[in-house]
Length: 167
Image (cartoon, rainbow, N blue to C red; front, side, top):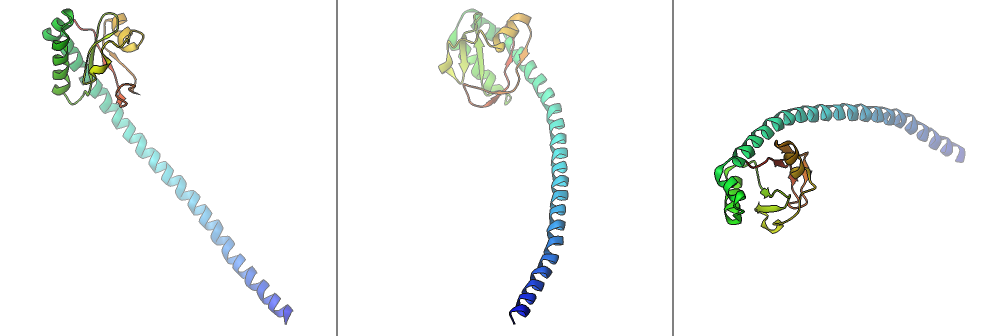
């Protein structure tokens, strides 16, 4: 009786094993296949999204640069810088930020790289940026400089700096 029960238990165990092994193999192969397909679909979607964003970004940065350059050439801003009229600079920077949804922050540096005015971060007045490309590149080339995207230490937000000399 022990042998029969043992034989019966062994045959049940082998039967279950024979049924489960193919299921496990098929399940693993199916999982790997769908993982690869899903991964490829996600990569293709992200690649297409990145391509579209790159096209939009180039247009957006060109537009933003033109906006910055146009404001840098404006007589009230140039006059306020020349006269070191901080209240007038604060007012002009506030108008620039309010006039466009492209910017959340503007600032003006003096010829030594110190912040003369900043809107809305007035607390950074006098901060020295003379060693930063946002100051050195426009001073060196006399052209507009666009930084790489970064997280600003001041605002904590993703930021692209667009700097141009004030004429």
